[in-house]
Image 1 (tube, protein in one colour):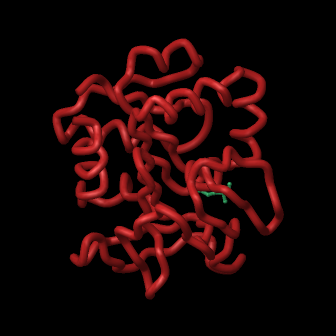
Image 2: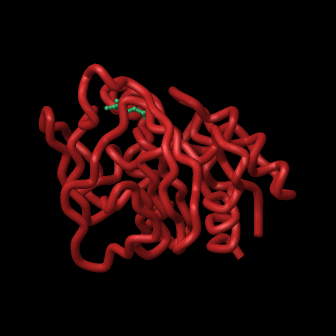
Image 3: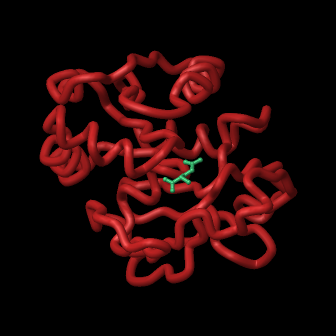
Length: 186
Ligand code: GLN
């Protein structure tokens, strides 16, 4: 199934690596577009999307990531990753790759609640969720499938080879989301 690349320009990629390795996967940190050639799947972690956009531009990552996804290789995008791939970004509007047919509102759980935990559900079962200045998915359309929800709103979605979570599944000890991603890589 190949190694899993962790986009390591910005943000919380390390904990994804630990979780994926605990499930038996091999991981490698990706800091240049060339390195994408060697991996079977990619994690775009949480972080600050405005910073990520600048770094992606500086390193020429945008087209290689588009190609990676167009070739059908799986991507697990969390939080900032969902913002990057979304079709539309609000609060404020921001450029994005437009590959996941959702609208997201950034930092949409209120400024007093920077970060919180709760129990949502994934594939019908309870799942602990950590939200860190998380975006809200305000529209999910087209071929987007909702795999997880928190308080009735979509927080885990899939479209083709993209799996997107607005929460941080790498910060809990439940590996179900990463297991779905590894299954997509088979
Ligand atoms: N607030 C960040 C942004 O808008 C996302 C936060 C995260 O990835 N944990 O880019």
